[in-house]
Image (cartoon, rainbow, N blue to C red; front, top):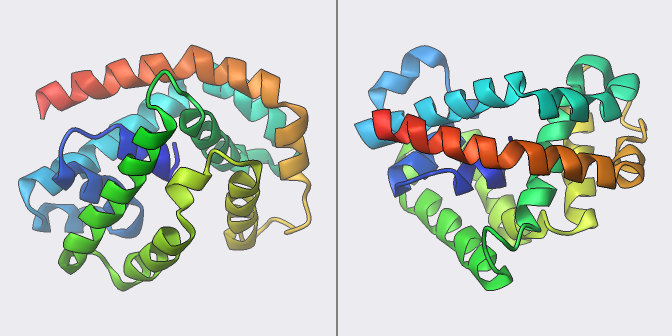
Length: 193
């Protein structure tokens, strides 16, 4: 899952911080944070493990695998944020906007825990309101472009966004089959933390 889904699948502000930190820290450093943040790191890992093993995600990867092979999971993660952001059964537009603002506020309030590269990203994320704008095609196109630019072995001109547009219906079905299971799993993991 990508930033919106991870931030949505939290139960405390500390978990929001941990969910974001997971991709920016070394494994051994996770124990240096307060327990609530450690719980967010654990939750992030559990979400990723569950996601990677779900049959609907395996199906969704088939959309991108011919273009990007092993990187297909990264593009599925970005795609799923589009469907989360547009899922009005989870939140109304106003609630998604409030969620985005709350996440930025929590991260800004906890900057002492964020590494410099995450702090720099947060400035851009908040200014451009990435979390809320995942609902737009342009927001997903931007995110996919970022993945292509960061990937060492991918040509930045690979038409992954075109594949997303051409397969939106198929990806929506994968989301519908997957996300309720993920929400249930996240709640179960949270109960154990």
